[in-house]
Structure formats: C-alpha cells, structure tokens
Length: 182
Image 1 (cartoon, helix red, strand yellow):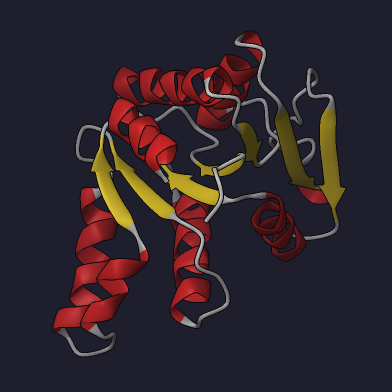
Image 2 (tube, rainbow, N blue to C red; image 1 turned 60 degrees about the horizontal axis):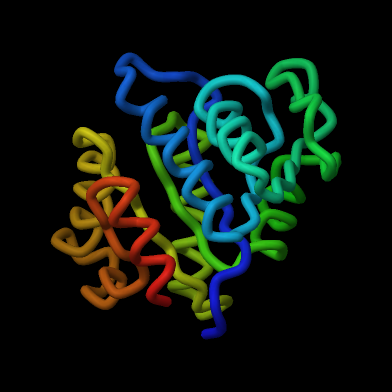
C-alpha cells in the first residue's frame, strides 16, 4: 500500500471519565497533522471527536468532517472545518468516511465508536478492503473490544485469521509511528 495520506478516526462524542482519553485524542490529532495526514472524522465539535479535530486544526492539518443531517444539532458540527460533508444517514456517513480514508484508527468511545470499528473489521473480513485498521489502547480502553473479538474466535464464530485484520497498539505515539511505517 502507498503512504498513508488520510486516516479515519473513530472516537467518542463524549470525553469519557478519564482525562487521559482527551490527552490521547489531542495527541492523535496533532500527530496526524504534523505528519501531513488528513484527519477524516465524524464532523462533531463535542467530545473526543471535537478534541481530535481541534488539535489537528491547531497544528495546521487538513480535516474533513462527515456528519449526517440529523446529528448536526446533537453533535454540533464543527464550525472551523473547511470541509464538512453532510450525509443523509449514519450508513452513508460511514461509507463516505471509508471512501476518503487510507487507514482507520479507533480510540476510546462509546457504541458509535464500537459500531464503526466493527463495521470496517467486518468489511475487511468479507474481503471488501485491505486498509489498515488500528485499535489504539489508551489506559485499557481497547481491552473489552479486543476481548469481544477474541471471544468470537474462541467460540467458533470467526476464524483465527480475523486477528490479522487489525493491529492493537498501546498508546498514540506507537500508533503514529506505525502509520509512518506502512
């Protein structure tokens, strides 16, 4: 695969209970911008989504937000984005994020973050893409997701090869280093 030029980041529309997740989102946005990697994300100005976008923008990075019309008020679309695409549904939002991205990074978040991460993993399992998928573990945030994926293998619902579809990496600096090596 060619150099990574754009990364979809899946993260929370909330800040979470620990300041370390805000710090991680800030470091990820800043690090992507520093490396000239375009951030593609959910388009909101709140939660970790807002933090990652603010950090990328503050570092002079390119940021593309994708938000469905019905979430524009709820997630408060980011007012400083030069590129904000409004979609008609969550499904079209995820598809557009997929189309614009060379890789995916999932950090701490809620059900939406889990949904987005599982969907790109499922698409990879079905052979619809071979883009890198990185699950960033910050202070144990990825452990439940990784355990759920592992459970599908141990219970016989998925083949062991699904482990090859993603990389679980601890910490943002290691994620950024990995992106630079792809």
